Image (cartoon, helix red, strand yellow):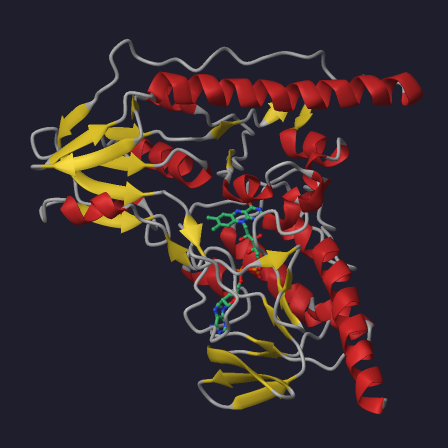
Length: 404
Ligand SMILES: Cc1cc2nc3c(=O)[nH]c(=O)nc-3n(C[C@H](O)[C@H](O)[C@H](O)COP(=O)(O)OP(=O)(O)OC[C@H]3O[C@@H](n4cnc5c(N)ncnc54)[C@H](O)[C@@H]3O)c2cc1C
């Protein structure tokens, strides 16, 4: 957004509570790699120029990438400046920060979609002997007490953490709710390559049936490992991870799991099949006009997710040897500092493709904000181009009204 505002000669400042790339420095586990390939982190006027476009960035590489972008575009970043409130004034907005106040005509909320880990209310019912942490607090298996680990949530964070903890030698149970299975490689290319080429990631928020639902859909079960392997529930079962249904309750030190594991997995297999059908159809159309090179393999499908005949429905946490629970149940933004009547009942900013009901106030970096890829680094550029155009015409209209 800063780059797009600069291109339009719109004077602005970027307020950051920590350092550039703060969340990547402070809220990610040590071994995390991006699940999007290097070529896919495209920012306005900036892309990957290394010799491994299909690799997956480590966290230090992500930090270096964002830092070098900030430097390349000379972004006017004020670090260690925490915004403590935003409220409207006759002239626009008053933005209070710890060191000082700012008066501005427009504000872009780019404070992230993943500020707070979502933890289900049942967490309050856990016996005190069980240690708990969120995916945001998890760093590596050495941080965990000995004994078994229950990982709750089977999307990208949950499957990756379950795999790492299991490889450390601990018994791991994974509570599986709604999730989206995805092969890392398909027909000889990275799944993200196909989703990008086939336009799946470009689907617009105003062109799909139920955008509210789409905004809540969990992340794809993908991991960016050097061996480009698929990390699905079958892979975890092969490693010795026990699968259970969604964590439905906790009573008397016992975890209760929903009996829907088989259905959840069948639904996930079905959705994966639909995504691969879309990709196959796109490849067929493309091939008719352009032909295919030898790198595109024939279509194939993954075997169904294997589910035990009687998955556990109840687990006595102490007797079952569970010492730690890791909540991988998603994230939500923090807008507690926003003093504007633009939040819905769930505390999310109401918006139309990033344009809020508060004139001159915009949003960035929210799932499916304008496109499916808005949730990715790669989606920020196009969103920022469009929203900065809206912001510029808002400022022009305002200036014209003042002159009149
Ligand atoms: C575990 C995890 C893995 C991910 N993996 C990938 C991936 O593989 N590929 C991909 O493309 N995307 C991935 N994402 C999504 C990616 O994080 C987002 O696309 C991207 O970070 C969005 O950038 P952003 O600047 O909008 O938000 P953020 O990166 O969250 O940045 C928001 C910034 O705002 C600052 N801030 C917050 N509140 C305040 C305040 N009150 N005052 C001042 N500053 C404040 C924060 O310190 C932070 O630096 C992942 C996300 C998570 C959580």
